[in-house]
Image 1: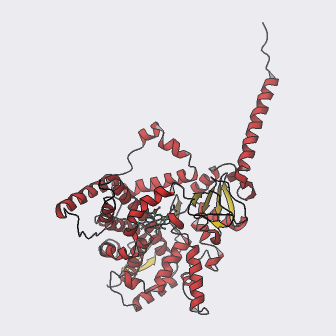
Image 2: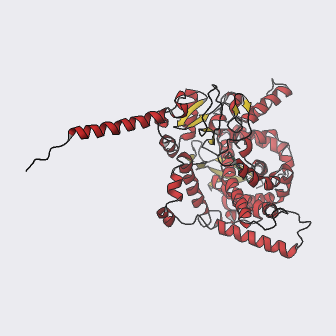
Image 3: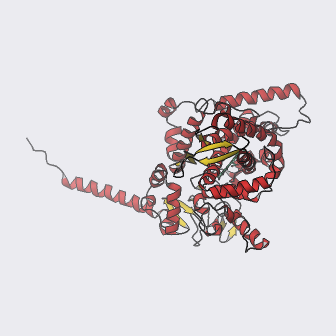
Length: 496
Ligand code: HEM
């Protein structure tokens, strides 16, 4: 019988073919779209796994700041992805130039026409003029927050989880301005039916989708995953019921639809989904706007409020200055929006907290179609260009000590003329990426400011707040957002 003879020649031939194919693939990935000209971590040049692991390690935003300090304005963070930090280039990914000529915003992630068509009918609901219509709804929630804090968190050696209370307030208030109804987070003083748990899970999941988009196919189109994944929460059903009730209420009390004074977002969304051009009411669209409003506005404002509380707790001198300015302004509680605008240091504290701790932790990516880079290289269509607010908000335009909490940077310096201050402020505002930029920027920015500018002074004038232990540091989770935990303080009622 013939003995089996291993065919080494065939083996080595196959190994050579596979090796050549792998090498070819690696080189193609490395040189993809000419991005090899930009520096970055070695692994990132070959796979987006680098991005995923960096986020998973809860250090992405800090690491990206370090990488930009090391490599400069452009860092390659994936085979087809660049991160850009230069504030002067900031609007370009959102309105790109070809050969120096600016184009319309063609870099949005998904179809911009569809985006504009969806956003236009509801734009007025977010305008500055509409803002004051929401103020009474916000006032109700501020009153509730102060009552609940007084009842549950003031007392000898009682430790207040002020971060949690900021979240309870932010969600009750966004639900109230959206639907004139809440889930009652502040009444309970805790999560309700795992609403926050599901939200955190979804945020973490979306960080996976953002860093490695191909996983969307696995997660969305995989029948096994669909079978095992539960419905996100009771929230969509709860909201749909409120929408149905509102439609019923409007039909019964205002059958002609005339002279209806909208009081909250829902009224405005109902009006927008029921226009002359669109006589059949679009229930799904109205529901979609409503859900988006709550999801987009809840955790972002929570994180912003937590940042303000944390930086004030860690910087007692700044807190004292703010309280002195608030006291001098002789405000009544809840503090009105108009009055809150007359206290520059309050605005400076909020802007500075958001500058160093932006609620969105990942870069806002756009798909390039002919975008010209600072070095003149025109990116091939399809390249991802992103800017991360954590990096952009630490550019030299913000002055010195950019990693420190210095609200004074937003105020006029003693050596500055009014015009110089105005110019400096305009440059900082232009470079501030907290709420995004361009056609896809945050539409709820003013609503968020309304919520924050009213509650912070109302809270500080009602309670003295002290950190439990000076050495306390918050813990951070870097998902799509940069949520914080472990912000603890003692509260004392200033009236007692
Ligand atoms: C500090 C608080 C907030 C921050 C930092 C923030 C940040 C952002 C950012 C960065 C974007 C743009 C994302 C992109 O470029 O793809 C965005 C979009 C959006 N935000 Fe906010 N947001 C905040 C509060 C709010 C509030 C309170 C609301 C609702 C009242 C809201 C509603 C929205 C909506 C609807 C969009 C989508 C806009 C569109 O594409 O048409 N946000 N937000």
